[in-house]
Length: 455
Ligand SMILES: Cc1cc2nc3c(=O)[nH]c(=O)nc-3n(C[C@H](O)[C@H](O)[C@H](O)COP(=O)(O)O)c2cc1C
Image 1 (cartoon, rainbow, N blue to C red):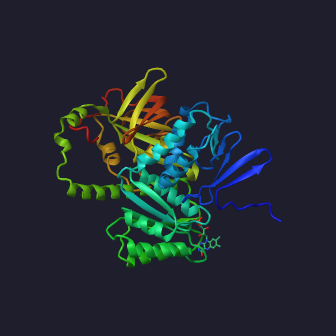
Image 2: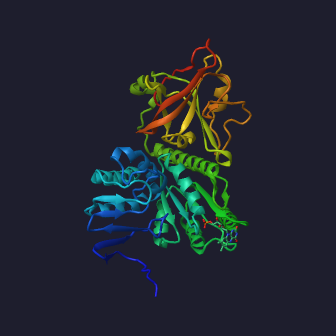
Image 3: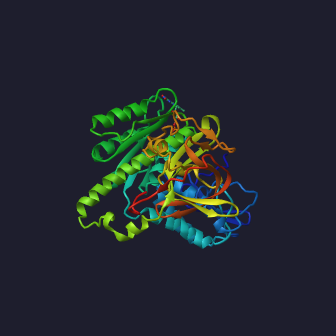
């Protein structure tokens, strides 16, 4: 006889002197989720919910602030695409008399529990205010297609477009159709199993063909082992059905490596920007009373703040997992004497942003007013997802392996210490490890602007 009991609905179990409340917590990404509340001592075993990717020698965090940015990062990467399910689960557990939350990843939470749970609800609510929404519909037997979906969702949410994730193996057809009708764009992902897409994907494809708007952006993705027929089938059926793809179908053999995940995140960001552009065009047509920012005196005054023109470069990981990126930056300032520190403001949807987490290193290449042409030509243009920002460039390295570009006036090598969420940007505070002036005679290039509404 088996000792395994399958929990399909909420139950209370008595085990020795402890009472356990078992709460099925299915989400799109983890359909088998189960939360356990131990009633005697008030322990909540919350699985992925409330987790963060920190390994620490301590059982629990020292205080709320010490892990907040990691928990928010975990939320943004994995919870945001199913925020309505996560908010309902959080609201449910908020009613329990919890003394300690023990999530699957990261330290337990023992202090300021109420404010933490309120934050979790607020993070979800902030996502839902009149933002355009993408329906991300997928199935995944072993998690590979799901991880492509996670990377797309991460890139999309960085643009402030919301993602609603539907694991179509565990959702009703009605929910699927409602989500398709409300969405401003669609993503459909499938593995190939036995030469086919799983049946729920074939049925979701039918719903998109019957209910989907051909004017809205669409993309497809999937993991395969050797032949990948499912993506070919989705591609041909949607093309024949009159849909135009916003990006080339993403086909990944088994699981994506880190550079591939980064490239997929960037595809997501482009997809999100495309949706935002369309939604702005729609709103502009219906809102003729918009004030032009060019004439707004507040923005003109803000634009009089100047910054040094720099190229930020970042390189992370070794060998085939190495990822490199760069961006032109002028919202840069020295921020501390001792230790020497600087601040830099990075737009949330910037490709390099994911390489600037706490502990990451980067180089700041300060440009010369006499030698701007080449770096501006290369780094001021938009890059395609995954495009090599340094192709054909002879670069050097800082002692920490960060990239020094030719023509820099000076460079600094720094490590990210703090990140502060500020509107549509992250302000990064970094401590300087090394630096050098390469051209002592030239002056720093300064960026003069007419308006604070753009760089
Ligand atoms: C039973 C089985 C059948 C499979 N059939 C195919 C196939 O016909 N063609 C193919 O390209 N890959 C096939 N694969 C490989 C899967 O597509 C591959 O493992 C993929 O990464 C699964 O993605 P998922 O984790 O999103 O389910 C098969 C795998 C299994 C376990």
